[in-house]
Length: 152
Image (cartoon, rainbow, N blue to C red; front, side, top):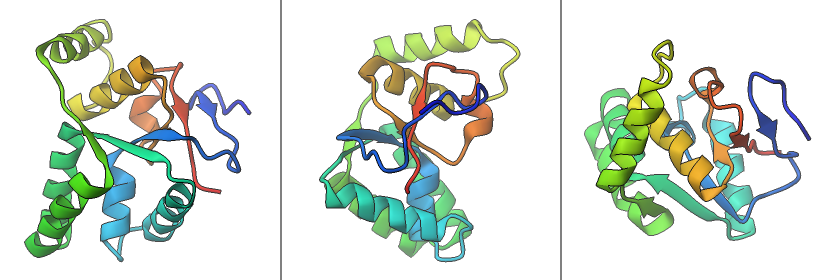
């Protein structure tokens, strides 16, 4: 099922991928009961766990989650998230070639206002041909070949 041209392809809600790349939003949402995405984050992780989807998360996103949870909730919850992530996700480490690839992506799009974390997510999703679960479609729409997943 195709999403709007702004968001690229959206996997049908009933289709749960075997592997998925996770942005910070769903992890923050599940850790912070006050977050606007808390309920959908919990539902999504339940759906993914039910079929044993491999959850991939780049290291820069791990750092982003820790920072946001520490600031928005508290340091103790951020630490719990930091303990949880290595046991629940496959953490993806960047090498020097990945850094160059992200840099080249950004240089080709001087008009783009997204973050290095967003560019990293796009690079990894496109290189590994995996869908991305995010709540940040605004900055990631610059990458029309991305495939997105959303909990049903």
